[in-house]
Every structure is written in structure tokens, then in C-alpha cells.
Image (tube, rainbow, N blue to C red):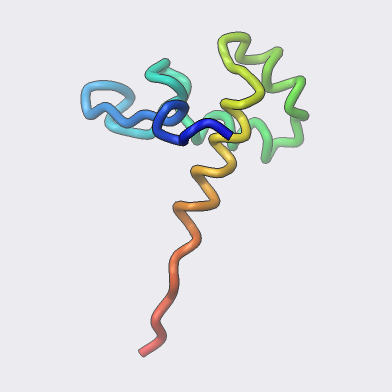
Length: 74
């Protein structure tokens, strides 16, 4: 898999600084929402034709890394 930094970009001047795919105005959350709604990878690619399969995998990996942190119980 390509480096996430090549696929997922964050620019404070674009989409309110939210993570986007390859500096396009396609937010990671938009891709994840489509997948969560039940669309297949092929259907997501049809809905967002500028995306590549590797972009979808990068969005999933990005989300996985963002939520994989230890929780310290007091």
C-alpha cells in the first residue's frame, strides 16, 4: 500500500482542514459514510469517479489508525 501521506492530505485551507483524498475536495469521512451506507467499493468508485481503489483502502487505513489508541482508565 502506498504511503498514507500520498493518499490522505490535510490542508487548513481546504474543507476546513478535514482529511481529504489526494488534495481533492473528497473528504475521508465522505468515503467512509458511503461505505457505511452499504455501498460496495465499486459503487463508491462510480459515485466518486476521481477516486481510485487505493484511495478507498487508504481512507479505511487512515480511520483505523485514528481510532487505534489506548484508553487509560482512571
